[in-house]
Length: 175
Image (cartoon, rainbow, N blue to C red):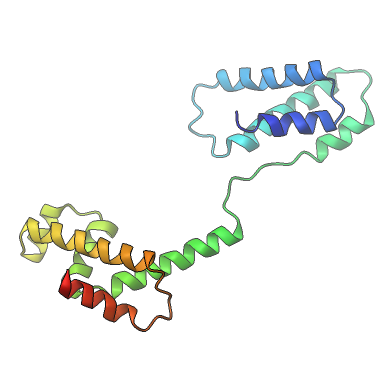
């Protein structure tokens, strides 16, 4: 488990004896192994921490004497979130907006082919039938559109770049 070192560090800071740390980690692995499926676990790191935390709580209930540091540290256990941070979400939204803007700036048929293929997920055959063109034209328009979008993104064309649409149309005519 990639989160084992973090759990071990937390347990060591909580002054859990080393032999108990090994037992807690082993118990967590046994619980994972006992699951019928792990497909429903959206956040394995957080789940791993929670298994260990639950085991500590269970051990404390069974124990007659509990160190106050252990109880305090148990409440301070970090719960790892695998959700993207605000910066990552913002960057992804900006990139999506840029890709949509680039798609919108493609030549008409190419734009429609890209939309049908990449957004709606239609096959080349379905697109060709719908637009009344050959599958070869659809294939070429997808390749051309994706190449134009990729080149524009790679070239670092910014959102406020007024020459972007002209460059795309120039590439479309030349390439």
